[in-house]
Length: 299
Image 1 (spheres, rainbow, N blue to C red):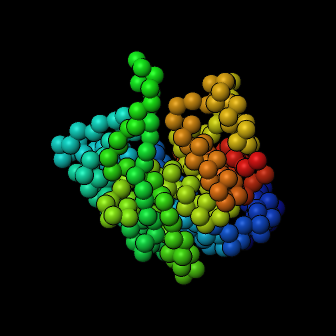
Image 2 (image 1 turned 90 degrees about the horizontal axis):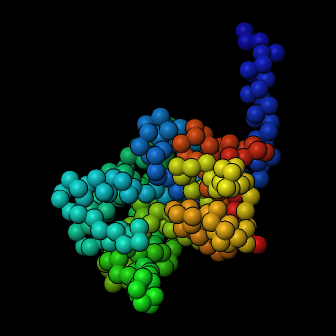
Image 3 (image 1 turned 90 degrees about the vertical axis):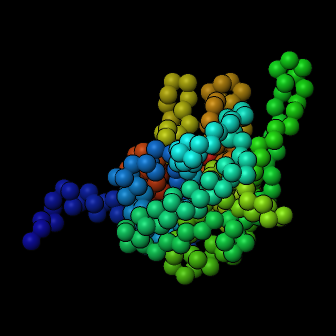
């Protein structure tokens, strides 16, 4: 018979009681999780991620997973002899690249994540924006300044899109049936063309449309850091603008935070940037008072 005074057992019980108010707060709510980066390529972290998602569903939260796959797309393009071109850090997507992206994202990666969740005891359904009319895309427009003339020029990125409309009934129906939607960031335009969408952008749009309680962007960094590498745990859009202006926030973190701001200003309760390389980081963020990443709220 186990010893009820065992410190390890007491610690587990205290962890559960600490989680109770958070379980009550989020019961029946939706969490949108963007999954990708280093964690996706590590079998142990992938197993932890799947267990975490299944646990969320088991305690009454409705997780929706949106995944990326940039490195895998790049590897497959190289394998088939298609050279990638980038403009301002964005992959130019011609018709052949779009076909490869759909094959990799909607095929191998999507089904692998579904299988991880199934193995962890959950029921997952893999789909893309094409399925059930989930997402209608529009062509992404970006501009850049010519360094010589300082005149803004429109970038043509080919078949790169952004969500224009999301039919939330598709995801709500899957969730209500006790299953976990796993969404690949591929969607058709109104004319039927297939567009590749940045996974962060797709996740943010889905979180806003579902009025999610949380949007989680799992990254390869602890969150937003100040100039002394201390984690900034709570930010508002005005804080982000100030930190960007003074150079604290730069590089790839800028578009991630822009996604978070858009999501929280369009209906998502809060967004979190956290380190997907840390085992169970999402559970630590949700169910403890200390948290594990950078929380972004509107206003």
